[in-house]
Length: 345
Ligand code: GZL
Ligand code: ZN
Image 1 (cartoon, rainbow, N blue to C red):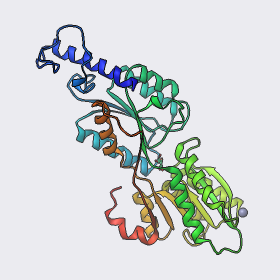
Image 2 (image 1 turned 135 degrees about the vertical axis):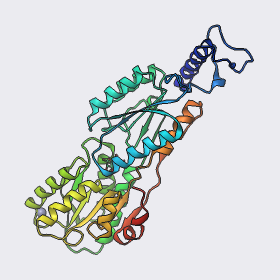
Image 3 (image 1 turned 90 degrees about the horizontal axis):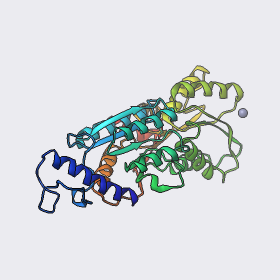
Image 4 (image 1 turned 90 degrees about the vertical axis):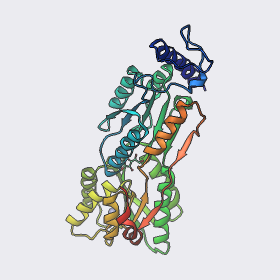
């Protein structure tokens, strides 16, 4: 891969710098290097040149702090980077793409060894990813994907299969209403417009429910993955429709906001309106255990360990899989009640 050759050259330069700083040792050929850099593969890529203190420098651009899932994801990244002994440069983009692009450019300026990020939306990344590639800095995607055609712009994508998460939500609903003799009215709270989870969770859900003509989505709107917006949009759904049977929310936080609106309207969540959400964070699982959410599709935020492993592998010049899918399950109310006590997040 082109980026590895550049990495090799970079490693050689770093090696020369270290030796010329009298760091002793040798480049694996028995002699300390004082002349022009050689392509020193034995150094296993650029091990922390940017930090100057031998620490690997990882630049991470995070979407924001919009949900319980995101907080758990951030904690996992920070804890794992500390455990790996990396110097983590962490940036919170407040869900704005231009802030993520700025952060990635600053990581390039600071000569980070690796850049990782969770793209808030799928599109608009090719230019800045090309800049990272030109700088010889490998990029790793976590959580959400980009729609770049040039897949050499990143080493791997570590995250859930959001289409499958949508299918799991749909399959449970089809099963619940397989004997329905009349229309089942569904409202949908979509995640952030243009984000991979919002696009894929919608597609997966619709792919499954389309086989049952009674299952009808009568309203669908973004709640931007937040509780506040989820509550606000659910209020408008309740005003427009007196016959809602099901809510499908693309994350727990919007579902929890919607529950507030449902209760304020004098309806019983989980009974008058069946609720399906995605994430399975602590607050969502608590509402499920109380019977307010009927089915939760898990989306595992604990991506830190897999990310740090991928960073080490990339810097060691190892080939890594282009796609690393996180393991995750589903929970009915009963199942949520049974596991709630030992949930990590
Ligand atoms: C999914 C992640 C989504 C969560 C939301 O991997 O990108 O963003 O489902 C979060 O809770 O805001
Ligand atoms: Zn209606």
